[in-house]
Image (cartoon, rainbow, N blue to C red; front, top):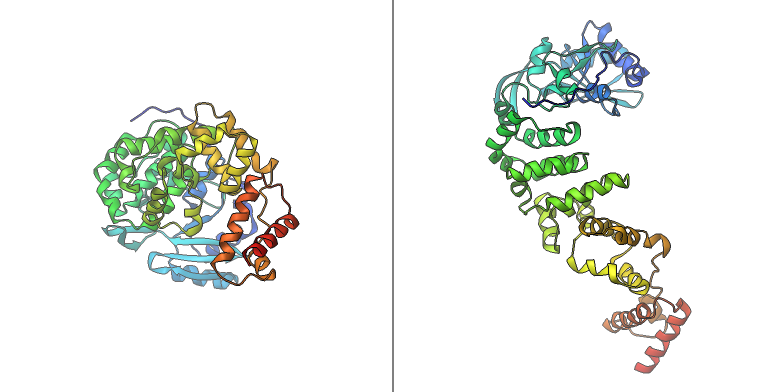
Length: 416
């Protein structure tokens, strides 16, 4: 097993704001009043121990779903049976949702779906989770319970499967992508060799996953601080071509991630995906279909057209024409990737700021202007407006709306 630096991890979460908030206390107190044990579990505990933000709070309990429903009803809290067959009830306290799940152990596994039995055994519940750092529990006093050894791995920033990695993966192939995503998010050092070997052996199982599940996991991975490092490992072992159906551009992604860090930019997973795998329009269309991207997500994929590199040599007038053509929405994102692709990114960083220096004007004429001047409806309107717009652009956008309407009136008069 690789030797990583060990980081200091708190021994207790007592006094944590999310643990002390009235809503959390109310749910825990309701279960305790009904005679049931409950602990916060998983990502909530992991992130809290790492000093990272806690958003959702998941609770594990010895109570069955029916007992959870009864305990919440007695306490006047709303309980929704969102996943009773899997032991999960969503409890809402003062508009704050909590997923409360009964302890479980696998009786039989078959792919993503497993036949589970409810249990009161915390260690058995921990054994069916994916990674050791996700099998950490915290009771209402902030006391940590670690039945699998997750604290040691968390301190070493090591992402390690629980038990047999191949068995965990065969239970749900999405764990392959989660392994790389957690490595990108939490582990700045070398990847766990046993886990990587298991993922590689079971790589063929990725074909069983829905595009929606792959897309969600890939976006989270690309947003992580170590995205470039994890993607490089995935590319070396054949995962990226398997997932995207495109040869990856690892170097471009690495440079974009490095510049995100340098300029303290928020990670944009779609921009990083563009750097990784979008060279022409066909790539954008391919990824949109393969990953089931929404229309807005597909629009936010930036086509890294080599011809755009010529923008760096344009004069100010030429840059304004290029900005008008590309649009203010896509321009800064295109410039960020251009900077990552260029040997000297300074000019591209300068180009990125152009929309703030020169707000992109809107062509002031529309079809109604031609109709008001007596031109009959038809294709002539569009052709005439396009002609005048081209002249307006060539004139560096100098002519105002009144001048353009005068020009339009003259052209219509000439055609009669």
